[in-house]
Amino acid sequence: MATFQFERTAPLPLDEAWRRLTEWTRHGDVVPLTRVTVLTPGPTREGTVFVARSGIGPLAFDDRMEVTVWCPPDDGGPGLCRLEKLGRTVRGWAEIEVRPGPGGRTRVVWREEIRSPLAPPFLDPLVSPVARAVFGRAANRLLRRG
Image (cartoon, rainbow, N blue to C red):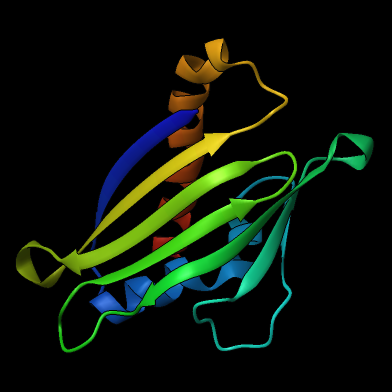
């Protein structure tokens, strides 16, 4: 299993950073060759299911996820969302946390574990830094775009 974590600080209120990071279809706008489809009616809550389809043609795969923890920030307190990855190709989990940061900014902590039955474990040390870079860039774009 490949695990990674990164942190960002954004010049946004907690609830705006949360909104930008948890509008699932927006992830498809910032991750190359990816389209996100929400399968359950909104608003997002525990039990929400969505699929990120990544790739081209026969090389595409689905990353099916379910929200298992949904605690939006409230009254200036932190927020936490946990996703379980339930696909045949991609398994694991992801957590997105927002909390008060310095100077009225928002601190974002993103943690993730990815595993695939198609990838041998010896590749994990290579997958972790690549995944951290890809998801880190996506988080940067999500936080910058309103």
